[in-house]
Length: 59
Image (cartoon, rainbow, N blue to C red):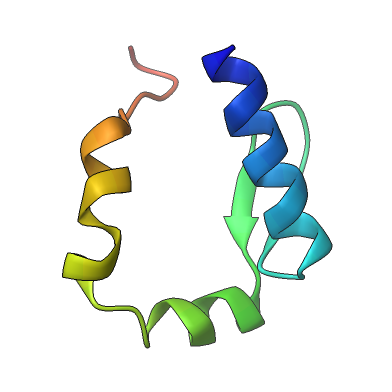
């Protein structure tokens, strides 16, 4: 279920033009996404940041 929730979140972000899907599991903010992100205060999104994890090619 968690994976589906993340995928739905990415779908919504793509639909809004905030992120773009490169290939495989790679996503990046768009220019518009960076613009919007700069206006977000960390305290507004901290509950979601606390739920996230970071991983990459070296994990």
